[in-house]
Length: 133
Image 1 (tube, rainbow, N blue to C red):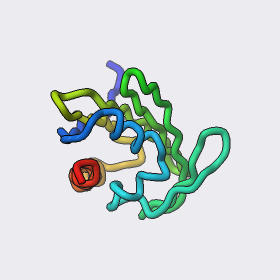
Image 2 (image 1 turned 90 degrees about the vertical axis):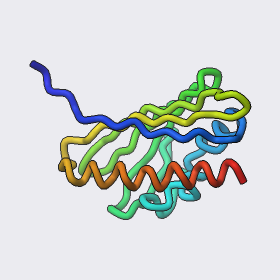
Image 3 (image 1 turned 180 degrees about the vertical axis):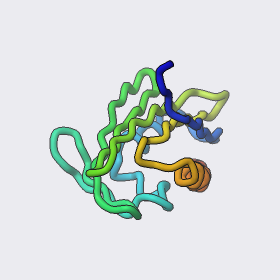
Image 4 (image 1 turned 45 degrees about the vertical axis):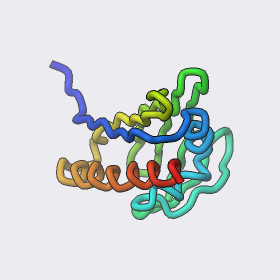
């Protein structure tokens, strides 16, 4: 049997149009405004990558977006790991639902992944607050 990673899906129902949320999230330079637990700063890099400083150190982010489908998949990489996040912004009535599917990287213990997912709840709440302001 092939090994699969643990996963978690995080979401927020937001009273803001998908176009507004997509525009905000498609630019990683905006991410420190909502990713308040993990991201310290983001700056432009090369070839579509953005340099990022987190509470754990330095790495890079790249967004693979498809606006017409609300796709905001992105990759995080640093010297220890690479982590792909599958992300969507979809219409929900007069607002939107933002969804992220996250997989536990091999370098992360179960306890570390559980904590990271609790921290994601804080960040999703901050995203909702920012987008509804």
